[in-house]
Length: 434
Image (tube, rainbow, N blue to C red; front, side, top):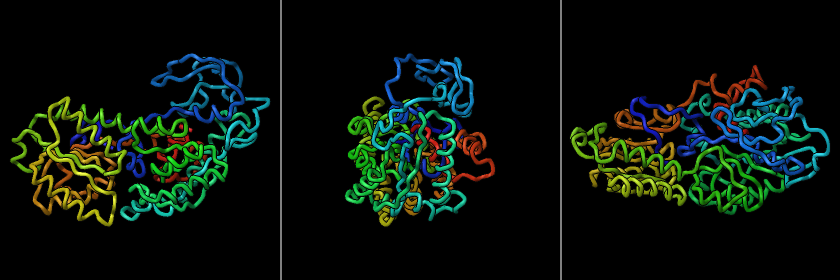
């Protein structure tokens, strides 16, 4: 959730994927490793010992990968041939399986099916986002589910699932994503996890409505969760082996961000600030972050690294509650504290919406610092005051053109005439990981 490789005015962009829902990932480091979980659950016996084979930028295990034969999609297996041609994250190819698949090898896995669930929460961050942006930018829940089913149909045809197919079950949950993000609604999150289990889930792919509480409750019910958001490594270890994510840990993001800030900005003048006097001063950093314990821990780790390694401690650290009703007074108070402490450069480890109110408050208080914030995409940036965000140094989500994205191309393979949800990349990634 902390800022990552920085850019100013479009310089030095680091490619990242997706826009709307990925905005709540707080700077994930994309890690897509296909089929590890499903292979373990679906394959009837242990695979032979395997070595590692480097292919392009990926290191993939190989055991039966060199066996001759045709894959389910009709590819001829051989050295360096992947299971599918359209994904650079695909494992090595495997000839079509025949024989006894072991029947029910895991909860949610039968002789013929692998069941996954998707929770539609009572209220969601996506729904809140939709109130700020036009439908063509955020899409609808129905579009998201249709897009998910299209990817599942493609994967069922082309990936080796040992005579099984993936079945998606959706349910309307009792949990409120916005409440859960504030650490509340434990009982409802537990009820939703129990619903997923009773639906026979092997895994849950509610990435568009994932929260820490719901993910933890799924793990407690021994249901695999694909979609953990900005959690530290210790959290994944605590809930192993049921938590997976297409994103990096927030520990990694904090370390990378702190290193970049420390090496390139600490102990130098705040030359991008809007206030002329700040541009002649050595930077005084201030930190703004959500008070959620996991997010706060990583944000404070970022501050600690900058202070101890680069001798530039934060002069003010302020936590806020993710609460839309309290956004304006909170932003007013936070900015007042930053200004009173002479902060020249604000490190905003914030959710996608809070900068909108922070910038408004800064304008009202005639305060124009540098901003170091996550780039959640143009649609969010355009909502923030230009007079403030013209002094923002942001890193994060920089997308490829849609037609060049693997997620879009995969969708079109299955549905050439259809239109995916605007959130297609956020839907594709956890399914590919699974």
